[in-house]
Figure (cartoon, rainbow, N blue to C red):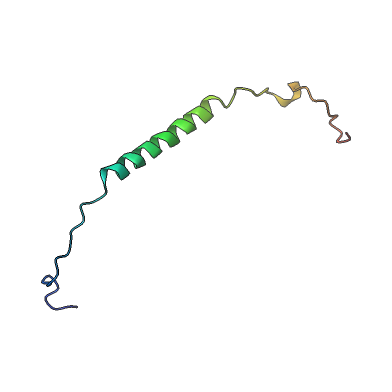
Length: 65
């Protein structure tokens, strides 16, 4: 433990915290993650044919092409 640690001949700058630009970019990134998640869930049923037995395939199901 240092003696008189609070007294220093040098002026030590104090942190002003996280810059506002970093906060806004973090918040924007979180919002984008939720938007991409919403779009993924919203379009999950689009462009799919369910059940798979109704899908027209040109390859026989036996595996021989």
